Image (cartoon, rainbow, N blue to C red):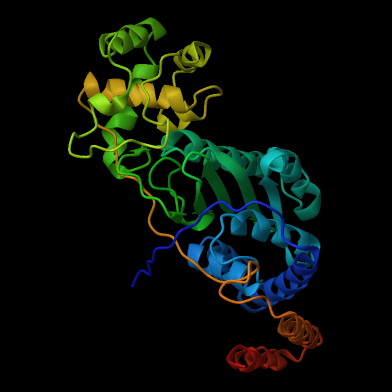
Length: 371
């Protein structure tokens, strides 16, 4: 049975206190070690790609109960806490400028795990395309500002990235898992989570958008001047937004710019697409310079000229709330936190010397939880 729930996930400013981050690092290190030792790297990736587990981990570490900062702080803590050579797991990227270092950090995996150049090329492609899809193919008003790429020594991977809408102060998180991605542009996500569900959002990854994806690719393979003419034909002087096509029954103003009819396109990118002649939609959006405006323009031409509609259903599924640093639902109990770390540290040490049954000491956490 699928678990769902609803809660606000507002933007919070400020930083986690140093005393808390110090403890988060220690507890995250021990918990990650136990999970990987007991269940393996692939299970750890599956859990990271589960939004409920991911949010619950942020709760256990005491960070926050409903802030968008859980994503950035938790992935940052895991990146610092996990030793890539000991556990066989590396986390690349992060928030803001750090996310742009992902390709360089992926290159270092060749030395760490002995990956071939072809393997590294493939991982760089995964990282780039997952970000490109959530920036261009899914348009609900959440430009990405955080990208975390989890890679194991076996080459399996998971992606956790987040976008922000500064107008209504909400965030949205995207989860990807390698074993479940069959196609980068056809429902590739394990989860899309956030507290705001848009009445209308452009989702070119929906199965219902298959015809629109194909038609958009075909249009991009034609002379750019033909696309220019088609855009002019559907954009009379008085038409300024997609409100012309949005059902009148909605009658709502949108706190996003995702639905404005593009007035200017990157025609150099359009020309590159024409010269490249992409075989499919994945190749099309992978072309440098093909951004949200071009994807939107192609989708509109596909719908209004050729009758191939994209999906306007927001893919977000659910959001969640859990507990911590702001004193809600209660302040972090430092003594219990330290004792929890000590229990897990001892359990890991005992397991390493061959007494794996002693991992049952972890069950003592239940006693702490009931105190």
